Length: 248
Image (cartoon, rainbow, N blue to C red; front, side, top):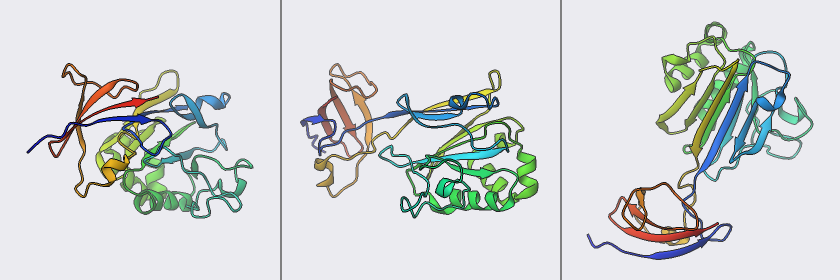
């Protein structure tokens, strides 16, 4: 197959999007006194923080392929984001929140969370779940075994714990599902690269055949991670090669 060598200059925020990656950080802790240590961040920017109640709950954030975090239903905003979570319409704070909250001891809440995980999150969307204050798999299983089965199926046997935890996964990619329970002074921190290759340039939209990036090289031929403001070579699954620079 004949390789195609292109050079493309891309500016962030223009119509031509780039291969990009963002860092997701979720911090979960047992100490309710410091709300900012129960938080979700993207690229060090605070997305949401705090807890709503001292009852053990699941806090669930959903992030689309463009790294936009879903918001709760609030008044006329996000009317399609009613997933049976109790913090809709100011149920926790009088604003849109960037997580959905489910009480671990409420059977209906657990049923609604099970429905969210199985039916309402599209493929290629990131799921982040954390359990500040406490978590008990056996208690959840006793109240709603369907949810415990879903958690087991997605995150494996390690989810059987009585420790606070953070769950991560990309819907539709079973190999991406991961959990963190290692505690440091009652705190769990998870960091993941998300939203890679989430945006497609106009030149890719004109191609009828799908292709994906196999690897990224610098001009010496060494494989490297994505870097802005530097000419990089993208090797695609269909054998084509593209040279581009992303201006940030």
